[in-house]
Length: 301
Image (cartoon, rainbow, N blue to C red; front, side):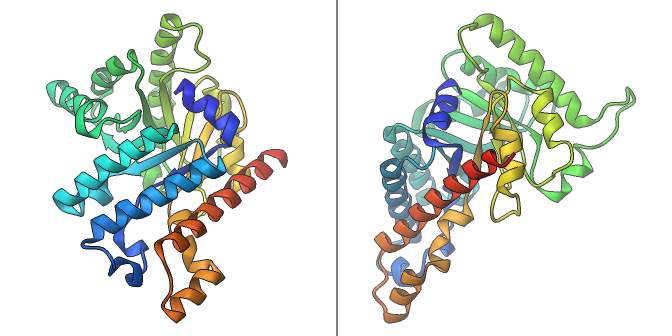
């Protein structure tokens, strides 16, 4: 998490989401590969190379569901994508949202912090209880990190996260208080670190209380979904990433599907000459544009 924070200051706050569904790749390109999963891997690798070249992002977020949907070959592509990201020198966030108890949680932690699916940081769902976090925080003592769901970017988050409790607080604040407690423990263990390995997922689709959330959790690094395709703007995102410890802002479809709005790609699509390199360049350009948009949002606060 410390390295991610440093990279976000160097390369900007953008996190590129490799939530790569085969449907995001034009049929004219898909048909050149032996399977959709092979095309997805190629697209991911081409994007990773260009993001590193342009220094337009600090990390990649890989949503496991899209790879699970492709079966065994998809999970092989998932593992190879994680490896490619980690070898790139940028941080790899695996969006797995696991949350279970006791030995099961330990098995999940082992599965995603070691072996074929090893990654740097994973997302965690705390709603089976705070004891579910402990197996994951043990790995945080050895260089890994977690992002715990705090305020998500979907409209239905209000159904649970905003529920009032008997003590006058809400569910969100209960989770946040636990994250602050855990962070205090890590602060005592590693006083030289500017931020804890335990971060929080805080969406940028709800303007209400955004500033208050940043103030409430000054030492927690944020993973910020909702920017771009989900409607979150750069100014709201900047409220969350440009103050205190900071954060990284995810964009997935806006980058992966940028070729659909690219004039040169559309021209080549019409004349039958569109190549993988073309859509990867469109994605790279979208990443650069997103980085600039987010930085401008911070300047306009």
